[in-house]
Each structure stands twice: as C-alpha cells, then as structure tokens.
Image 1 (cartoon, rainbow, N blue to C red):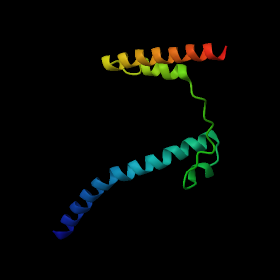
Image 2 (cartoon, one colour):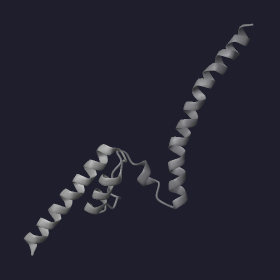
Image 3 (cartoon, one colour):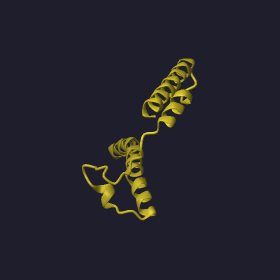
Length: 101
C-alpha cells in the first residue's frame, strides 16, 4: 500500500515540475534553434556577460518620435500630449532653420 502512495506523490511532483521543464527547454532551445537556422555563430549567443558590440544602432529620428508620440496611444490625454510635442518639434525645427540660414 505504501508503494501506491509513493507513486501518487511522485506523480504529483512530476506534474508540478513538468511545466517548468518545458518552459526552460523552450526559453533556451528556441533562440538557439533560431540562431542555428539563420547560420549565425553560436559563440555570440553563448558568451557571458552578453555584449552589444554586434548591434548596428540606427540614428534617432525626430519624425518617428513625433508620430509615435502623437498616435502611439489613443487615449485623450496622449492625443493632447502628442499634439503639443508635434507643435514643439515644428517650432524648434523652424527656429533652427532660420538660425542656420
């Protein structure tokens, strides 16, 4: 009879651990599978601490900033803030253009 209860206890433990095991395999395995499928070197992904020296950063875009600020969220408070940001950016651009010419 005690063997039956040990089996039930083991089954409960496995039910608790199984989702964590699957999550761990997915979190580690899927990024590696993606790196392998694109043909990139695995050493970049396995270095610790991770470095960002392989990233090519783009320049800051004021127009993208203004658009995202204006239309990023559709709440009334954000629309008002977006309009103010667009007006401010336009004013700064006009002043800078007049000063440079």
